[in-house]
Image (cartoon, rainbow, N blue to C red; front, side):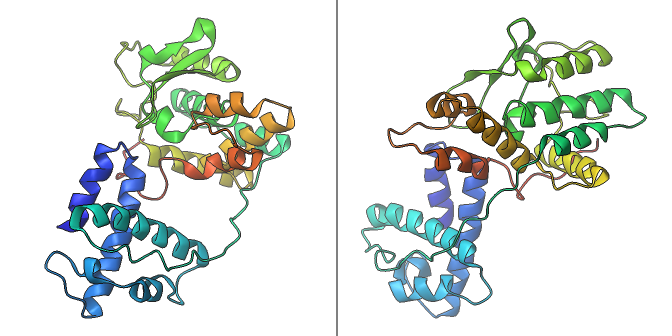
Length: 288
């Protein structure tokens, strides 16, 4: 199947699992559309589609402009690959990208952040201290949910206020998390003895806490606090706070694990929170 072959090419290029899943979803949707249009090709109907077919697919009235743009990006990436693999013409060269204004991520005020932490409470002291440490790593240090999920105990360097971070497809790096150290120490003091290779953040069954569970927990505390908070805008709050404090853009992007370009703008740094390698497509929740 041509979509699976394309997915394998993305995996070889170390694209994030979330990006690959989104591309696969969009292309399977496009392939079904091409089949309904009666397009034929020995390999896949998509390879016989014209620019007009692509345009008709993305400009459906039930799709928002932002969704149209995302689907076109998926199809363009596919056709660039298919053009060399199957010697076909790139059908997206004549299709214009839909114009839309990116949604602005809301930022939390210091009062909102305080309310969030005040509402991280419960009867289980271990889980409460765990969730405070997780929220602190996001809003006070700018860590991604997937980076937090992948941490092992041995990745902590409490003496130097840093953790070893592994971001999919990127070099391993050490990240300064001194602002979250008090919460991390509190969590470790309430947790049973753990070995270096053990997951840092675990559920009540001592299994690794998954990204969806982390997002769900943040949402629960935000609802209790009566505020609009999720891992994405918590991270955005950190970015904005550092920019407002006058941090150097290159140093900030390096801290966040972003790829640097000579023309990197403040806007691009702020938008880094839109590119987390998680999102709505996650594995089934683990019990907490």
